[in-house]
Image 1 (cartoon, rainbow, N blue to C red):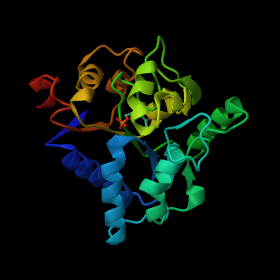
Image 2: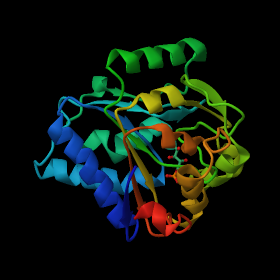
Image 3: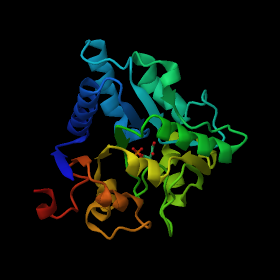
Image 4: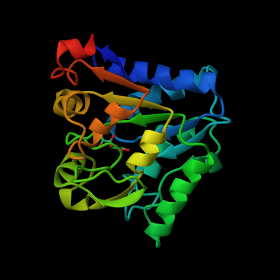
Length: 247
Ligand code: F6R
């Protein structure tokens, strides 16, 4: 695993955006696995900026997002489709039909999840998978549990995830209790994984994912088995990782 130790959120965002832009330049028809939440917002800002400067184009890029809340329409301002449109897709030249975000309103989640995985297989898996990490070690919405779930699936969000995401909603009760998440199979099938983390509240999750046992109790720990992971994190998020691991 290659680790970039950056000073702060801004530097982390710039480094992550450089890696994503590098992927696009190297492979214009790449498949980007995308994440939402606070962590990638800054990186998306850089990508939009570089697109506007004519440095990168998303014309041939395919994207597939990690997750979506069950019950939220794409027009809901806390849905992950809405997040992707407003933070990236609406500002670059990606074709609407080349973007995939799980459908939080699907009437048939089982078929939907199977089709989502079939789509990922049909495009040869993700070229570069961008990941944030939950305070509890979740990646995508693969929450801590007693086994890793391979397929895209409907997941009951952990209470700690609902607590963490309540900041985006008017009240905690408004946070959806379920999500559709890409499974560990598609994440581990990505050719390259770009894990990003910022802030002290991610320090335990990063330390356990890098240095702890590989266990579904900390889903991020599975990344120890991936052959091509780049971690971009700020000093605060790396503060609990022993110095020897980073050097
Ligand atoms: C989002 C996702 C989640 C987040 C994680 C961290 O698509 O899959 O795993 O990356 O919950 O969220 P933030 O970045 O808001 O701290």
